[in-house]
Image (tube, rainbow, N blue to C red; front, side, top):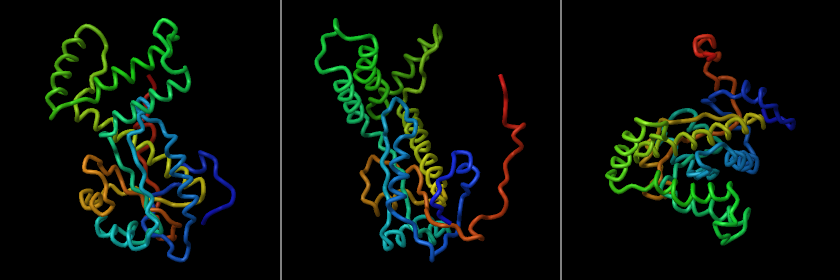
Length: 247
């Protein structure tokens, strides 16, 4: 049940469970869900590229249409609202330009290189040259050429190796996943419940939401207030000692 007192980070982490059945008599405030999505936009993101979009579904008819696309999971059928996390790797040029525009705001526009501070030079070079090198591709051909170049260079020094189109796709999905997790913890802090659903027909979800062709659905997150039976048993985790390594 939603509480007026927000939870601490540790409390939110422990409170969060993947909830499969929500209480139909307990609606949730869409403004709070929107606030949690706004907090999700503060999640760590590779190179600050923010190659994501968040679709907040509050319309009951759309939720009803989404349920079979999520294979009629209880978490989808009983959801009060849905949040769809979408990867937009295709927007890399736009996002790089946005970062360069931010550089103009921070450092001033059209500064000659002779007057640029070291940090500004590095930042402008990164978004103007390094990012295009990493993200640009042409039917995968450029990516493989870059990969071969990296393989040779990597024989002599440490170098970033994830430069193929498939590599950059993984990078974009990883950071979108960080945003989704931030959202779920923010919801938990508000006393709201969620369930991340990777099981969905992503093509049909894209069609229903009229998403751009080059976008990709990262995950659908259902939202609501849990019923007691909505948490399927006690939490199980592999003993921490089996997964923790201090080096």
